[in-house]
Image (tube, rainbow, N blue to C red; front, side, top):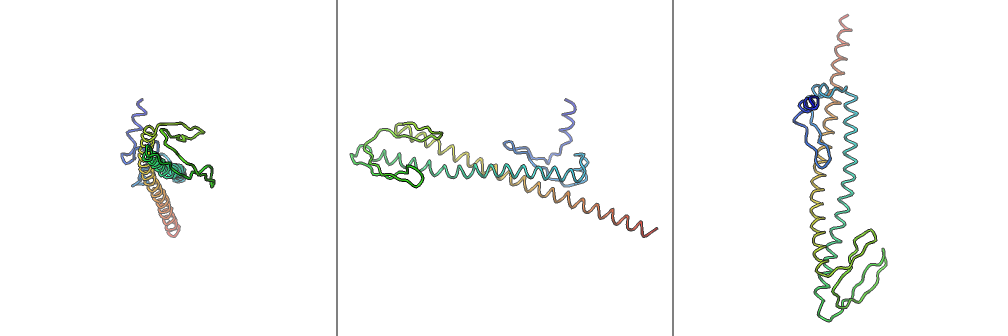
Length: 197
């Protein structure tokens, strides 16, 4: 318990908290202090930072795939809402609705839709359910709102992740440059000592 408290107190306040499981990156102002606090040598610190950068890149790829899926799903839901609204508008007029619909990829069929009180919605995973037009509208509205909210959260997560990638890349550069600078200082000191003798 005391060890946990002491380790948390030594952490820098510059460490960003995590966001939805994505750990925050620490901006390093003083590389020497950072290395002494973490207890790592330069190569180990660079290895750790490179590994963290790869983890960020992997999470970014997953989030981008989710974003693409949501961006494809939102227009589909909106199109379904439009179809249900069209069916409701034609209801009671006695006029049949002629529609072309996709049976399979690239295969379409023409249908004549008479007055109908219900629609079938494809829920995925080989499940289709019949709903009244009002229930379908409310379900599709709720799904559309949820998809838009999820997309907003996902965009915020991606921005947070991009910030963490940038901070990590800057930290890698700072640690590497500090190491190069220290090597030059040591090399200059050894060459001047060799000249003096």
